Length: 371
Image (cartoon, rainbow, N blue to C red; front, side, top):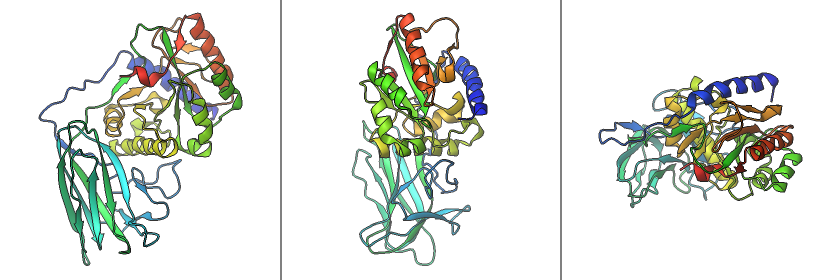
């Protein structure tokens, strides 16, 4: 990582982590919570995210080579265009959205083509799809509604055609209903247990020395890799998070300062990274670390809409040769230590481990403590 970026990260980290000390966002539900559109990139207007796979549509999961963005939109400047690659494909594009249990929602989308379907599954109840046999030369709105089950906190939204029926276009999807409560933010884990938490960000320089140190010391690691390095060396990240208590969590797609982005762009960054973790590792993150430790109220809501329970920064930075405990003094129970996948990671972890031992602390898995 460039030196300027390192400096920027350290400056942001110190400021934001101190600002986040002791903070938590209330999560009390209100009966009068307004209905909003919970869908990610519902109008297909967000450009391909930096560092994302070529041709990817932010927030959406489609069969490779079948989906693109067209300017022939129902509204705005963009719409989804899907051409199934064969008669054996229905050209499905889907996303997962977080919702409230026991809550009513309405799902709609504008479509163009023959035999186009709009589905909501995983709601806790059987929900028939909305569909059309054909829209002729114009657009048609498909609409369905559902009430989530008592234990349902996510739903799967899907657009698709039918086998052998050709291309379709879709735009202006809307999942209307109350949003989940915002995620809470913290820089540490309030606990009397004599534990400390080692976290590693980004993933650009996976080194065998760091992997060996983690294995030799049986360190539970919470990794926040970006999707691109994850895709480059997924087995490495599987190995370094193989110690019990370890986990892989969400760190956005593009490592941009989220406070410079709209709420919709933040949601696309977080949800798309979550989807990459599910696709590559088969895990669903519930903890989110904002790049540069910068976040705002939109971040907390976007994180919740993507299924994140906690937005976490850190209380100490041992990256690139540092030994910086933000509050001063030695490490304390519940501290979260920041490091990065760089060429110095092995020695950074060694230094952090020695600091933990000197304070009488044992490394533990972060996700299990963030209830």
